[in-house]
Image (cartoon, rainbow over the protein chains, first blue to last red):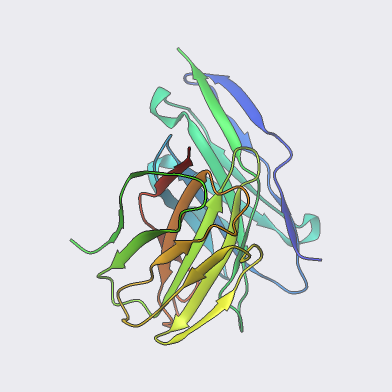
Length: 114
Length: 115
């Protein structure tokens, strides 16, 4: 069955510290991979996406993610977290062909300490 | 500016009433989606539509209905058959262009509360 797992429900980091949010997926073929961010009561904003090619993907707001096929992972990283990064982060998987459906992870809520 | 609008932002309804959530996009996207978001459960797909006058059930379609009469509009009706409709509802759209076909753009959401 296709699935996306974000094993960390909550993460707390200090401002200026590095960040890594984990995402593992189960999918029959190489999927499209996405990270979205959501502020409270708002819609989702795309941070970055992986379709093919270079497995290290750069996104907005200083975020990056690395696709590791052998580990079925697409972890999100940021070298220095800002207080404004506090939000909920969702990993998603989409099909390369056929259906346009996404599968979303359950999200990781990030808290940033001043 | 191109984007997706959802209205209203907050919606209250009494049990037993049907209610319709609006979703409009001016991105010229072919595909549109409705998701339901509950705390700790991520986003779950209710319905999606790839072209006008066609739509498919998602994972949790029971108690919901949709229509797609125009490319830019994809309203969602929450019927009285939906047992637990209180949730945050998100509408999204995506292009069918081969290069960016799977990037979904989201609206700001509608929070529905059943009283």
